Image 1 (cartoon, each protein chain N blue to C red):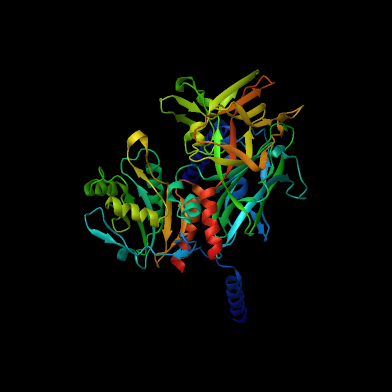
Image 2 (cartoon, rainbow over the protein chains, first blue to last red; image 1 turned 90 degrees about the vertical axis):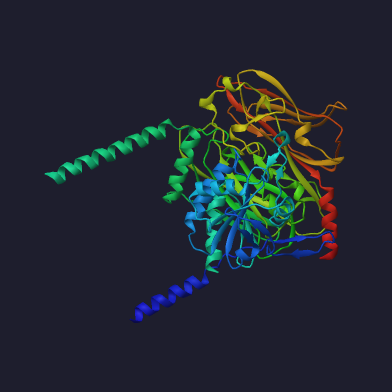
Length: 197
Length: 382
């Protein structure tokens, strides 16, 4: 009995001594006057793939990743989709969500988004496809520190292959290139860290 | 009796799987074999698979996992490893990277080995973290976020005095290192790469903005040698395309990699669009990235017919390899203009029978006036 207790105590001590990885808080920027500003992603309103309103209230107390895409994207979206399916099936807890914002406001209607969502076979509560107005989209892109172009002249129709990781307090905790295997590994580790906080 | 029969079937199936595995492995390219071998050796802990990271107030030191060299590995074929690096996730202080170095070492003794076993090491910053911090969203997604690549022939560079690349201590960098072996075929051995990045938190630096330009040559897709077309993206040329093929505005196919045969040959490429200079600026540092048998690499202002930089390459005399590809460094800088046209000129001289893979890129570092103003304001407030 004594031996068991000693082993347990030593193990607990050992676990406590391992430095816990802490993720930085990245939802901040330096404004025009040189002052560091922090912000939360706590205000947005979009429509999801089943035509319902989806706001920042839906992400409160949940961990989520967010990316930009369009359903007819021939290049980086198909491999991004495969990797996001993998992440959605890895993290089945209700506390984890994926948000994908379409940048093709002309062609990606709600029904197109719904069909795209059906093809992923992931629950519509888990992976939410969102459409908003041009101004809402550009505002949320700035909050996620990215840009995109949806003027399909001269092939200038692009978005990033990065996803942002947001914690339960609606702060950005990391950016990950979803096309990079190392980044996916890191993203999964970091989601685990946030889920265990 | 039935048990024995099942044993036989399982044994035969096992042999079949092993045989087809060996056949599949042997049919792979040298590069893919190296990926599988390295993965197996690292996963089974036969060789060290961990990165060692040490940093202090002036230096970041990274030691790569062990690379097992058992074959000739040309550029981009050898064992490689990647990692993420952050100086301090819990601090948000402004630092400056000022110099970079890589060397090959013996994993057991830590003694320096020949840099002929260094293919390259790359540092990529994270677009959204780096530019987003300063609200410079128009810079996100505009170019591949490679800070620098040090490669065979140039294993040590520094920025001019008073210049640096600004970063925050909680900023994440993606680091890749790859081994090389052009010549040794009669033995197997292990190497590690030791990377050193000098940094400072002094408030006296001017920011540099990195940009990569590279030779691209037209080719016909139906003439491509697919069996040799085995080049991973983003190793030598930082772009998001498979096998370094591009379409220009005329619909022509261009490649950043090509074969050179036994001869001396000159190539030119108008790099004005790659440079995309918006405002008159100054160029302060150039780090070339070339393959063996490159002879001379020049950046020209063809509007004024003047040479900005010439890299006179020294190749090894009795083996394949680059002895030196000198960099350019200038505190004063060279002025470059949005209205001017610029050209890259490369002279190669393959002296052996076997065709060689060639590419040529330059990592350029310009004074970043926009960032400088932002940083001055930031320092004033903090």
